[in-house]
Length: 283
Image (cartoon, rainbow, N blue to C red; front, side):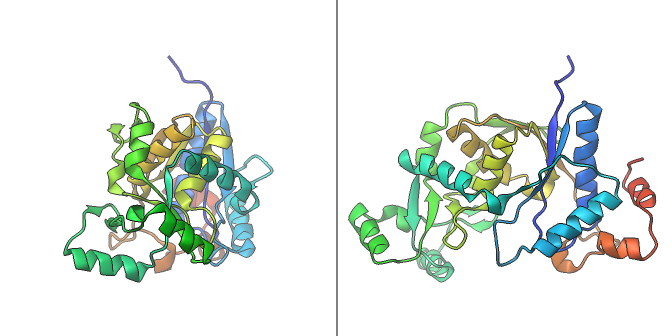
């Protein structure tokens, strides 16, 4: 039986200009929505004011329009909806699922070195739980003293409350059991920006009714944690489409930090949108 019309999204961070990998992801999401008679959304994930700029966001609009991509308006800018993320964090905190973490990166590294080892997850050594073991009195005293802190998910408590259906389906990789231990007690509220990628993306996808999430396989393991948050916040379970990453002739993944050729530079160099779409497998 055919699925109902789908809602997909392309959600770049305006920390630099788009490259071919972004174009492929956006076109994949658009094609999926169109083939189902559904909706395609554009979201700007600009929660980090130190790295995101409005100029880059405007460039994203220009690049996507050049590609022939149309999206619904108004575009959701995450920076304009911080209250939604605070509300979600407050819900988790009210259930005792968040705890303040006062550790700096140096503190964490020292604790790992002192222990002699640390479990490893998808992003390296996992947080050793230093602040999870603090007493309530100690936590309150540090907060009252104005000590900067993030809020971490107490994963053990979270799993006890999340329910049994911690699975998700990926069209490229099949059924998946959630393995949030790959990220451990992840930071859900950063001390500098008041939320985190993990919390914001889950909340936004839920609020916007996104049924199908198209993104690169580099975010595959984050989905294990996202399924836990969806369960805790009573949000629907999307279908995921984690596509392979585009690479350069040397086999390295395209990335902003490596100065991959931007869509703007390709356009200014004479490539047409039709040529690029054809190269990426879209007509």
